[in-house]
Length: 103
Image 1 (spheres, rainbow, N blue to C red):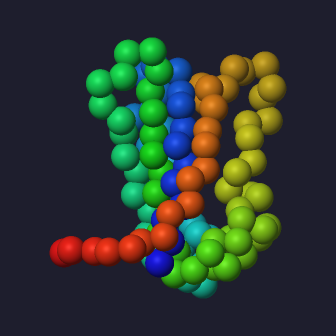
Image 2: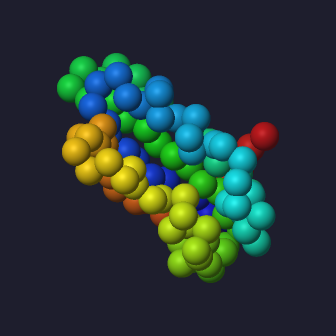
C-alpha cells in the first residue's frame, strides 16, 4: 500500500474551511485501488495553515491512473473567477510506501 500526501500551505484561517472538500463523495471512490482519504490539520503554526491530505492506494499504478484520469482533472479545476486570490500558498506531494502497521 502507498500513501500519497499532498502537504498544502494556506493563508491563515483557510485550512479548516478547505478540509471537507477533500473528503466529499465522488469519482475518486470508484477508482480501482483507492482505499481512503484522510485530512490532517497541522497544529501550532503561526504564519500559515497547513493541511496534509493523505490518499491511500493499493499501488502506485492505481494512483497514477487516478492522476491521469478525466475525473482527476474535473476534481482539480480551479475557480473560474480569476480576480479572487487563492488561499493556497504552496503544496508538496510526498509518496510513501507502508512498511509496517500495528492496529
